[in-house]
Image 1 (tube, each protein chain N blue to C red):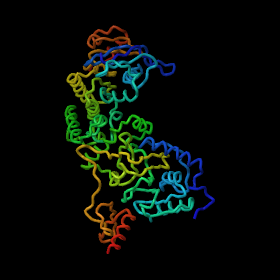
Image 2: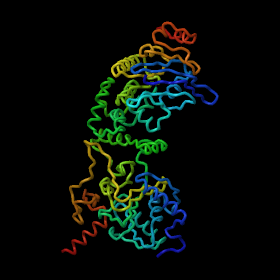
Image 3: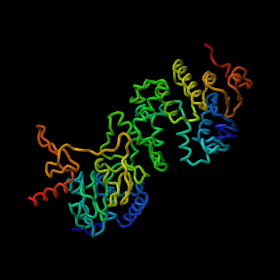
Length: 282
Length: 254
């Protein structure tokens, strides 16, 4: 039930309007980081304050909200954020990807393909992909302005020289619409191809770093690579121990102290619906 | 003519760093700028390499395709493109010119990657080739400059700058801070590279031996002004200006 002592969505209306303006600008310039006046939230930084502020600014009373943390709906971050919006907006929440109109996520994109009527909101810890390579922000902004992205390939080169392959497995840098270099937030690189030409609107909020950026529907998103070391996603030899999927992102779970382990889907909704589908068929 | 500076003046507040300096540089020519500390050599170098805007005067560079262009009327993007294709800049301390935390190969390949090279094998091949050209051990291509000696770092910095086949290189005291035998080998390398690649270079130095060995022509600076200029051997063997005479006579003879 909605707590009427809070404004709808917790933030006041002027703040929401300010954030919506930033979002509009971000959508107009795909991949460009728009600064915004990030607010203090009743959660600490690192718990998704950027994503929460974006969600709070776009959510309406008829929206259906799904919150994902590492692919699961029932982990602590997801439960907290879902309860937060239940209390401050009273909207319907769901765990089913297909039923949701708004999806706030940390670390994953759902396995079920998104549609045009959905918006996905990513929580972003470090919005600047060049930050680890070039600490001066003045310089990184200039590099974005002039599209000078050679430095990112220096990082990839370095990975291949040291490890024989590009060692980055998450937050793998992408080029958006052939123009801006973008951090896709710490999703596994397995999910990178899903970002490209996705029918859903993708919004990114970084609360501590005070940046919002976006990938509009049907926008090309390319993962960086070398011609002779093309981009590849993770593969597993095992199938999901619960639903048998061979095409989803798997988590390795240690089951005992004697080396027992199993691989299961990280997307709990996807895995659960496949299991119940099987039971019905049986 | 590849570079022309006309009536350059740069002041820091009331202090004059560079005053009314004009010169021309021709393709393949090596020009040494000598003078004592504080005479405005480095300011002059910064002005002609587009890093510092002079208060008055112009710097023209002859581009490959579009003729002479005034540096400070170019957009920042054009100037930066020029700086990483047609120019090189060798810093006095290699730590400023190198990325110390990435491998030698990546250091050499960075400019190529910035220009759009996306083939790892080719990048590595080119990097190895350049390491060999500056007489470095190709086996060390995957080591970071942190493990290199001062002389090797300076060689690496030179390779990193020359990989795009620039036509003009600026050098700021490239050999100071190195011991004498390493200095001699590096100078020898720079001399043969400038001849081989038909490089034009502006070398700022306070070491007259460097000037004698490398330069075709010299400018002598004092208090922000050029007091004497001319062919290197003429100037060093028959200095006319009292300051140049002082400078030449103060070189220690072992």
